[in-house]
Image (cartoon, rainbow, N blue to C red):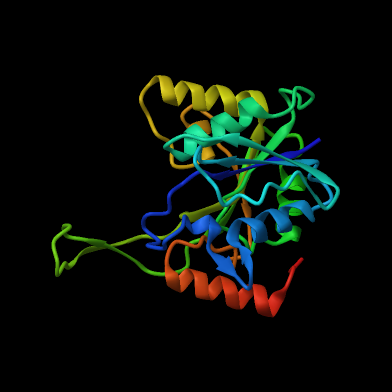
Length: 233
């Protein structure tokens, strides 16, 4: 049994739209609907739990998708808060040892084959995440002023971009996020919370077109990918 949590409670302020970015439309469907549609199509996924803001009036009220249950919960101000709320709201029959996937609402182009590869790779482990090795040359800037200048070139060997889904066992991830909250820490993803517990999550290489929509340019690129590739496997 594998459930997926989709944190979608953010305001998307950096995106600059009139609505939260997860509700921005591509060809008549919101980013969130594209994303959960892709997730529901993965055979190994049992159900979906979408974590929404308390005042979200744009959620279409889906209760099932592709024959799978779609549940909702109310999230918090930080991603980690929303994921923890989702973990606590999962059905009681989801076991402590079951893997739970967490996937960004604004990643509508994730490939089903990559999710299946992740699930296969983590079998018998404590969990891992989709990621992509860095290929560009990296520069560290001198300071935050404008214009800024290069301080140094940063070696990229061994560096990866974290993608989603990220998959960990329900009880372990719940405990890690509770511990982070108790210490006043705000992990930026689930892997960071697990790292703080001494775990070394498995890196599973995923497609680089599993983009996160953060800017208008990202939205246009996601639209291109969805139109040209459809439900890419």
